[in-house]
Amino acid sequence: MQQSAVPELAHTHTRPIHWLATATAVAGVVALSSVAQPGPATAAQAAAPEPKTAPANVVPPDPADLEFPLECGAVKAVVVHKASGDLDGDGTPETVAAVHCDAPMGTPPDGLYVLTRGSGTAEPRVVATLVDPKDRQTVSHLAVRDGAVRATLLGYSSSDVPSCCPDLKDAVKWQWKDGAFVRSTPAGARSV
Image (cartoon, rainbow, N blue to C red; front, side, top):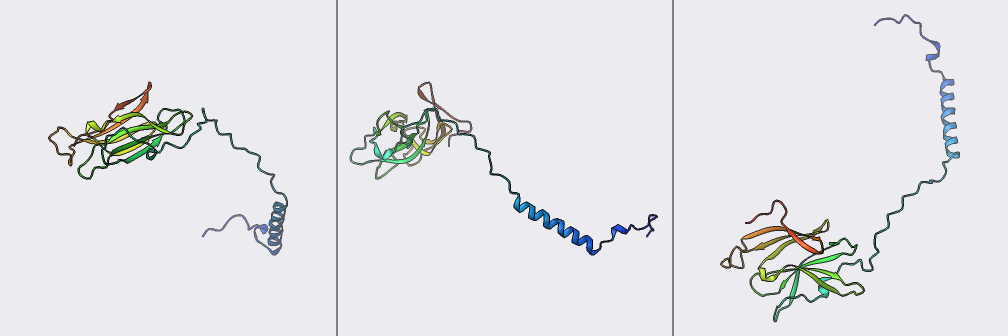
């Protein structure tokens, strides 16, 4: 070990008076901070933007309250899938419902309907048919996202395919454009 050329400084040694001075300073800071409190917060949150329209009915239509345009004979129509969201951008949610006849055997085809509430009335009504039951398709997945209806449809390549075993699968999307629902097939849709 090499010796320092500078002699040790006398003030680098701690003595009891140094500890007493430090303790007194810390106690003074603590006491002062408990007396001097900050004022109340004055920052305010920005006001939320006003909606463009304040809809009277914000609850989406319930498909249980509606008779669908299905001919089911002695059996009832059953809602198998439903999803809700604002499809036309008016601030009022619509409901999309996949419905079929409650057949005791086989795989009945679905109808896919868009429901809304009429202005001034609480009664839901069908405003669009996206899938007609005559097309012999079944809805296996249904969602409303970003103002679009997305569904997975199971179908048949020919009338020779038994109704128990659909051999086609399509991922489809409908979007409200120029007063109508326009169907498109998203990327990645495929057949089985």
